[in-house]
Length: 490
Ligand code: ZN
Ligand code: MN
Image 1 (cartoon, rainbow, N blue to C red):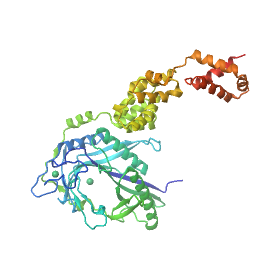
Image 2: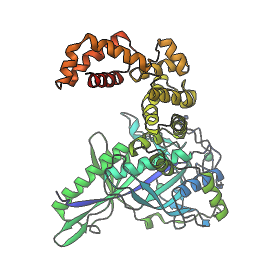
Image 3: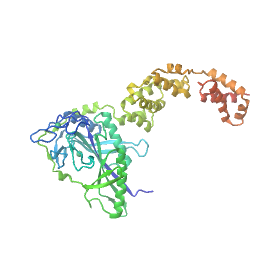
Image 4: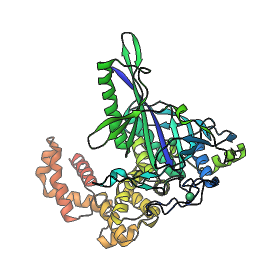
């Protein structure tokens, strides 16, 4: 089926930077405090107060912008974005308008499921601004009151604006996952959506093929999405809604002002809120209370050097140097750098990168969950797991009992040898295996006849008997030896 339309998606992400204090005053940014206990005359906008920029917030913003491959202008300034709302007592938000602290970057995304080719999403700009407070009118059941909590007011946010480069809800979700991964790797934000540390707005419209050529539908900004899953669902819903609306009204981009719609996660629909303000409505002007900020290229270089290995480079290294699938590389990277480092040791010391990935992504991750612990406290150090993998390969640990050995290593915090001793597992050497197979075949002439007649599965009976006589035998090896003996017999 040919597509009737293309969905065009751009995202605006507000990220709370991980500072201890607010952007222009010394108030704490800690989440969960009693309402209005983390405020002062500056962040509540009392007359006569003066803001002073939090240098640490600016540095975190710079780190993020550099990681997003943005250009960092030598000069940036602060502007007042003016609007009236009860949770904004100053009646303006300190933000950045025409000279943002960074612009023209990109973030590359790839789909671990192989659904689309790796693609580049351009970043239009990333600028710093302060957060507003919180109105609590909807949360007081049965009362008409509205309450205001100004604890958030003045919290540093980095607003990251993408170009409209995404073409499906899956690409949008992938972009968000990749961005979150990057931000957590460089440690600039905890990205906790429940606590409001990461908020997403999406701009979406359709490009429709008509006999008269391509037509664009009016752009809609979707708000109130509380999870990446909600973003995905809201975008799918909105694309279909715009398609229906186009068929009914034939309204094009420019025929109606940009609209804001809120996502209702329970009903699974977007609802119209208001016509979107134009930026001229905000009457931006430079904030006279704050000095502009200059950044030298030496500072940018030193930040670039201090960032370390970013997820994209790490993913590339896992796929190229360690021959992992995109999927396995992704599972590892999502666990965070300490687990990737653990994997590196297991892979290098065991000499089997794929087996190492299987053990780490399955058994190690499950063990961490079961024990509710972190990788630095895991009872099986990387070298011990590497040893287990080597011994399975050499046959010193019978592969059917490998998981038992691993479990014993976890429970007793011991090495492979001690775990095997505890379980009473002894490696069976080749001559013992041959002797056992010879004995069993001699006692089962019918099996030999069946195998010779082409019923190879008859060997299963011999394997069963072998396991009964010695639980340590490797069934695959028994099968191989028996077939070999039957073939060699006169
Ligand atoms: Zn304050
Ligand atoms: Mn903003």
